[in-house]
Image (cartoon, rainbow, N blue to C red; front, side, top):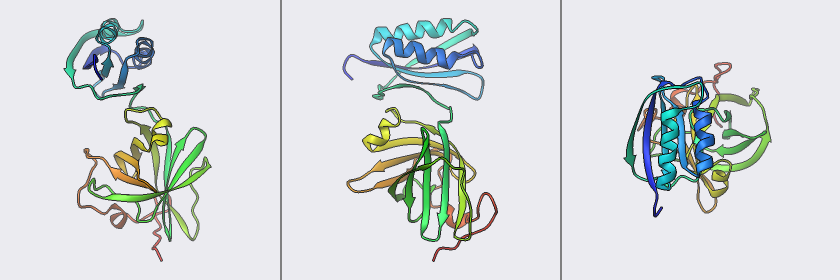
Length: 233
């Protein structure tokens, strides 16, 4: 991105619960700045901003003031590499529900996108090993549902998820590379759906929740609802 610069900043003070993220999102979009803003566990707010240097500096000036109800103590900003974001988004906020059903023939991953569940069939199930790329066959959309069990199906995992990546959803799915963070009972951390020529791959990202060499399907075969297991044919 010629002519662009990027900064990573941490804002400290009374900056959570006062609309800081939403105000930063609005100001960044007004300025044409790309990146993200998220709350940190310590009570601070972190921002990645990139774009025209003057626009990035204007966003920094806004961060030093903060919205009306905020009380900014310090803003620590450092230059970082431009990552090429195509949006400015709030991170750390649930985008919807996710569900993984298991049938005897395999698993279905369902992600809530809008008012429907986008579905991918996982013949071998998911993995927490970043070195394992699991085939994911897109299976269209389903109505919103929390999952139902029967003699031939169990709810293997469920929870919420965050949308991630540099491209806004659902455009990221349309382009064939979608990054997201699962907050399930078995699956946690970053994942990516990557489209190949014919199908998709589900890949675990390298983070604190990755477990190289593990087989979570074999280690935790039980339903998160009933505790039942369903052995494949």
